[in-house]
Length: 195
Image (cartoon, rainbow, N blue to C red; front, side, top):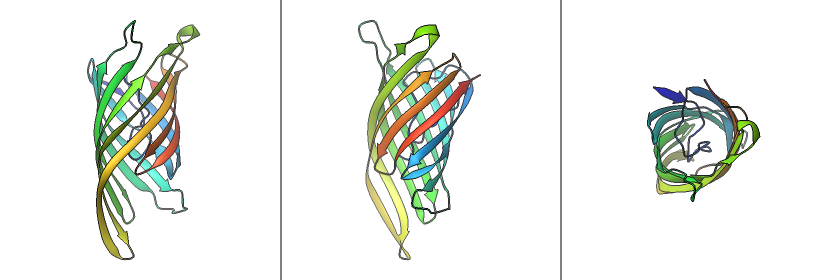
C-alpha cells in the first residue's frame, strides 16, 4: 500500500494536490493565511493506477483574534480521468469529497465534486513545475449559534483554486495555492516529502 501526506481539506482550506495519483509514502506540513489560518496535513493512499483516496485533518483559527481552534476533517477520492498525451500535455481529475468542521458555536458539513487540470513543465536536472487550477460545486450545511439561538442553513458550496507544485528533488516538493470558497478563502504554502 502506498501513502502520501498532503494538505487537502477543500471547502475549508486549499487543496494542494495535482491530478496524478501519488506514487510513494510521504508526509508534509502546510501553513495557511486567510479568513481562517493554521496548520494542516493529510494521509493519501494510492488505490489503483488512476485513483487515490485520503483523509485529511486541519487545525484552524479565525483571523478575528478568537483564540479557540477549529478542527476539520475531509475524505476524498481523486480520479485521474485524462492522462497527458503528446498532443494534449495536461492531466484532468475529478475529486468528490465530503467533510466537516467544528469550532465554538459552529458546525459545518459539506459534499463537493471538484475538477482539476494540471500541466507539467520539465526543468533541468529532473526538476519540474506543475501549475494547476480548478474548482467545484456541491452543497454545504451549517449550524451556528447567534445571540443564544441556533440557526441552520443549507447553501450551494462553490470553490476555485489556483496553484503550483515545484518538485526540487525526486522526493521533495513545494506547494503554493490560492483558494477561494463560500466557507473560507486562504493562501497556503507547504512542503511534502516522499519516502
